[in-house]
Image (cartoon, rainbow, N blue to C red; front, side, top):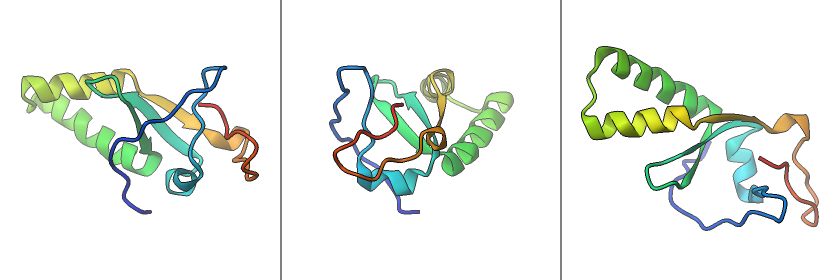
Amino acid sequence: MRFMSGLTNQKVDDKGRWIIPSDLREPLGVRFWLTLDADNNMVVIPNTLWEKLRTSWEGQLEEQSLNDSFLNAVERTLTYASDVDASTNGWRTDHSAASPAV
């Protein structure tokens, strides 16, 4: 999987759906997580990376080894996290059609 990072401006359609850009569909896979960062940006995390992060954060929360600002960021990320399974609709491949809504 290629590494993805950075900010991009994306639009939400009239029905409130985010159309996943075609170049992100393969690296994301059909199961991924959506959450919000401290600035209310949507964060998209592939499932394999999410499981590693969640395990690490939960361990740090139990050990109480986080400083206050990181603690708040982790709690916010975990609180707003939503598991997305795009396999239920499948990725659409023709570019005139919308991707699965998330």
